[in-house]
Length: 174
Image (cartoon, rainbow, N blue to C red):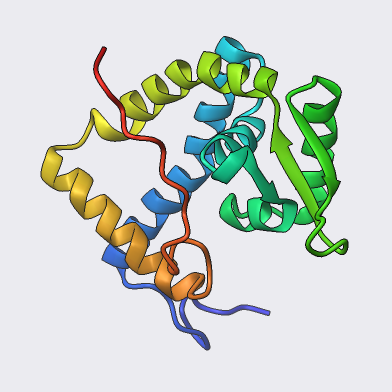
């Protein structure tokens, strides 16, 4: 079947296509860059770091696995596999939720908290190098606003839209 480009279906405008191509490539490359840095400098994957970082920011360093999955945009299967690896390393424990046994709680151990603290400088450095350093302060603010606007469309009930993303404790100078 010989179909001319754009015939029979709607195409993106050239400026939309340029923007989409750049964004799509960013969405592919940035996680790979973060993962490579975390593997090299901390010996864990970016995904594993996100699990641990989510728990360290949670009340009592404990959260339902389903909530962790939501906060890091993961399937429960992927999270469960990672949690098994983290549990074998002694960085988390899992147990039934006493409030509702249908749920499983993940708790960060002292060793796991130590791993987050050890790995955080590499993560922070790479995020700054890859995301923030190339942008002006105004562009950084715009990037956050644009991200939240897109997330409100693609994930209106998600953690970001509901303001449920856990915040890191405030950094204090020593």
